[in-house]
Image 1 (cartoon, rainbow, N blue to C red):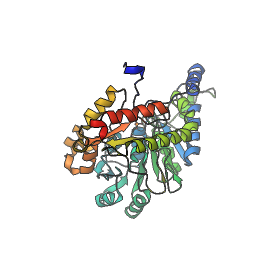
Image 2: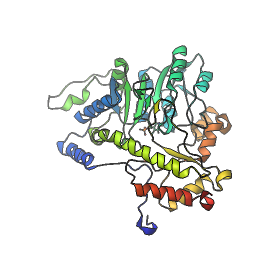
Image 3: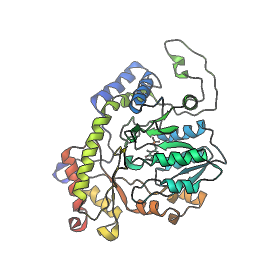
Image 4: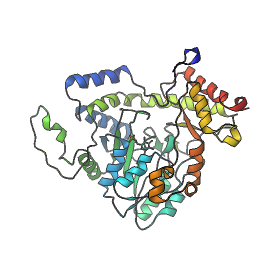
Length: 390
Ligand SMILES: *Cc1c(COP(=O)(O)O)cnc(C)c1O
């Protein structure tokens, strides 16, 4: 897209890929070993160290990570799993994939996170698990959620797709709950193209997830064609095809060392946005919760047509015309046709999620943005509001 002044289009969520990532992928291609192998093992080890988790299993996506977490925990028909509609559909799809029943509870309008009170109110004798979602990188109230889980005997599976760098009261995300699921999709803070990870301190869960991720074959089955010679395999469960490839891990291996630097950069951009938009009629993100590290994945504005004089969609179109790509995170899961029809959910059942979904948009936020890019976003936001937002 040609823009006045020759500016490039700022694609929302464009990945940061350096020469090292490219060289490592080429190395995989030249080595002849492109499937699951030593680079996946190295990537898992790097993330185990980064999170401090005892076990880290890399898979093809966070959706696979969520699905396998519930499979490995033995969840199925008749079981209820509580989560929030203020998430990407994959969180709820994964519950449906294991045949369990998703029970949705609304988020808070301000933090946009699921609240412990609403979780507790939704617990029934059939509830087996709860999936808190660290939306935008803001960390849920895990202590209160774990307190509920302990009292009712529930498993906590964190959807940490936005929160790889997050921490809760001095503990890294990935070490707090029984299972934590991460995403390395293109737009996430660390990318492998497609990719995901489960961390856990439970060796049995980790072992089952690893086995289920590769057809249910015996452990280390990926070595069966290696230079150690052919090995026979055995099937222990009817598993899935969710393994990560070395081609994907090759990218991730060189992203991990940048995580701290990229987070610091996003924190600076976040502070600049906060300052630049303070006098505008748009809503800006709530501050991070007490004693948490916010992973700064999404910087979201709330555009209320009555206050701003422009609808969210028209505002996004105006940013697009100025070369600024944006996203919507999210229109509530309950509004999608399948979920409306299958569960009878209506917009007014989750009023805060519906309210946010009508107003929210996410601005570019990435370690790859230069100061000029950030100022272009700031200028475009002002110019897209009637009278510069004044
Ligand atoms: C991206 C995302 C997922 C799914 O991740 P994939 O790796 O694309 O499967 C799940 N939950 C949330 C909140 C996400 O943003």
